[in-house]
Image 1 (tube, rainbow, N blue to C red):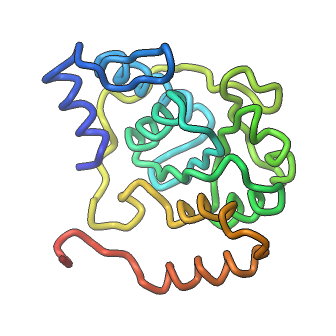
Image 2 (image 1 turned 60 degrees about the vertical axis):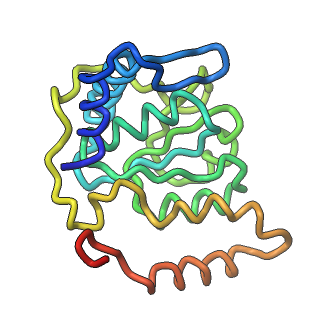
Length: 192
């Protein structure tokens, strides 16, 4: 089981219920399921498979949620990053997590240029990168073993979202925090 199955269950039980609101955009669970499947197909066409990392330096927007669910659908790991990261910080985070692709918008496009040889997914008409082409994705979520840390769907780089809040501290402080966070290890269902 993965979290994609939760979206599928919601869409089956309450297809017309409101799932997401982004400004004036309102999306039902049925619509979110369609967006998720086609985005998952687009990610798969870019070479994303189960266990791969999908990094996103995006604001809170519909496309961020769709990429999250599409990653879950494929059994990939979604890595949300702060869209305010400086070029060196974004490059470090994306490289460190081993992302296969990086989704960007206008606010993060300049910093994304510092990430070497990274396929960029352009969101909301961003000039850098290529938009994610909708494609037929899998009918159902990828079967992944929830006991494996990669199946949890979010990478420890989520702490990178706090990087901009470190004030005048440089990346070394961030690296030290990540090292401490990683030393905790993964909590596997059944361990609690």
